[in-house]
Each structure stands twice: as C-alpha cells, then as structure tokens.
Image (cartoon, rainbow, N blue to C red; front, side):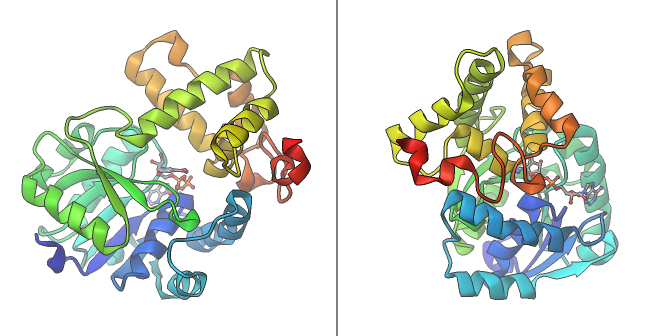
Length: 299
Ligand SMILES: NC(=O)c1ccc[n+]([C@@H]2O[C@H](COP(=O)([O-])OP(=O)(O)OC[C@H]3O[C@@H](n4cnc5c(N)ncnc54)[C@H](O)[C@@H]3O)[C@@H](O)[C@H]2O)c1
C-alpha cells in the first residue's frame, strides 16, 4: 500500500497514548476512528491532556486551536468491527501485555480489510512476537509514539520478521504526513530507538531511589539543571503513568530474566495503592501543582 492510499486510520485502545495518536492523525486530515473496550475511554484520556501539557510546560506541535478542533473530529465507535471495516491503517494501543496484544491483532486481522497495515504502539515488544497472530505478517510493524500532546512528535518504526520494504516505506511516509519524525530501527531490538535509551535512565534512577541512595527530587533537580528541561525522570514517569512504567519495566524483566531488570517493589507498591502519577493526581509528586513546577524547586 502506498501512503497516498492511507485515508482511514483506526486506533484500537483510546488510553492516554491511543487518544493522542488519534488527535495527531486527525489534525492532518486523515479520517480517524477509535475503538476502546471501556466506554468513554477517549473522553477520559482527552480530559488528561491539559494536565500533561501543564506538567510538561509544552503543547502539541500543531497550533492548540487545531489540536482542540481535532479532538472533536475523532470518530469513536463502540464495536470493534465497525471501527475496522474500512481501515487502511490500524494502530493498536492497548495495555503492554503480549497475550492481549496477540488477541487484539488476531481480531484486527479478521475484521480489517486485507489491504490494511497493522501496527502496534507497544513500548517494548517487537512486532515479530505478534505478527503470527495474523495472516498478514508482511503488513505488520511497530509504530511507537511518544507524547504528541507535548509536541514530542517522533516515532520509532521497526519491522517484524516478514515486514516488506513497501510496508516500511508506507509507514515512514505516513508518519511524515502526520507531522511526525520517523526513527528507523534497522535491526530488531527490544525497546526500539529512543525508548531503550530512556529505559536505561529509568532503571538506574528507580534503583537509586528505591534503595534509598538519593531522593527522587534531587535526581530530577540534577536532570532539569543539567539539560535545561522542565521535568526530570520521575516527573516524566508520573506523566507516562506509573502503571504503564511498571508494565514496561516488567516487560524488559521478562525478556532478560535477569534479577537486575526487575522493577523495584516500591514502584509496584505505589501502583497497587493507586498512585499512578498525573492520571490519579498522585505519584512521585502531587498534581495539579507538582513540586518540580515551582520555580523554587531548582534553588
Ligand atoms: N503511556 C505512555 O507514555 C506510552 C508511550 C508510548 C507507548 N505506550 C504504549 O501504548 C500502549 C497503551 O498505553 P497507554 O499508556 O495508552 O495505556 P492506557 O492504560 O492509558 O490505555 C489502554 C487502553 O486500552 C483499552 N483496552 C484494553 N483492552 C482492550 C481491548 N481488548 N480492546 C480495545 N481496547 C482495550 C483500555 O480500556 C484503555 O483505555 C501500551 O502498549 C504502552 O506500552 C505508552
């Protein structure tokens, strides 16, 4: 399929990332349909955009009026078959769980037209572990988005074991067509491009915090001062969601089987308590006014 043939884009899973992918895409005049198994998921995720933007002190790469108009143009449907019936490109953004993703990919394959490209927004799992749940592995790929709502418009793109060059080209061109920068992974690797770099930072800082070496606020201060950024690694994990952070770290742990890759118990305890970061109002910081946003934080 050529990029010019992609007109209808379907997102499966309208959580915090799925909703952002939907809005970024619709802003560039593609028809976007969203399906989530939980009613009202898209609206709930949109309700979190403001908090994410103010925490990150950044907005989308498109003018905010266009972004807000885009929210209204996304078509949400309550049946998966309806969402997929006319799709040219499908992006799965359900929770980070291999079995769930394989189940959803099987449904996507059964319900989408044979021409459709099937992509996963997984933060870690190579599509080669999912592609054989479908009858079209040559049209499967990883498209891993970051946070378009804060203007982070780069996307890791990686093929599976049978992905054709045509599918990769269509994916890259489509990303450019929705104002995103493709980061091409040339050879399969767990965590793709930038996400793997970010993961090394997370593993190290979580260890330093959980084992009581350094206060998380000092790690964030150091990061913010060193790189001139409005948020440090702990604030960023709050933005991403600590439940998702935990799932992603567990995914790396299952991949390597090495004890040093297991996320700290203290992170799991926060998730079990419901301290999920920005989305629950409490994580490493309290929201809507986290300590790191106070100008005195860096004094
Ligand atoms: N949060 C991040 O910063 C981030 C960044 C990049 C990629 N990702 C990846 O994107 C994916 C989604 O993450 P998220 O943060 O948006 O998660 P989330 O928990 O906010 O959203 C997941 C959504 O999927 C829905 N869902 C669950 N099962 C479903 C099914 N069978 N069919 C349809 N919908 C279903 C849930 O109701 C929920 O709304 C994960 O693979 C994650 O690793 C997350």
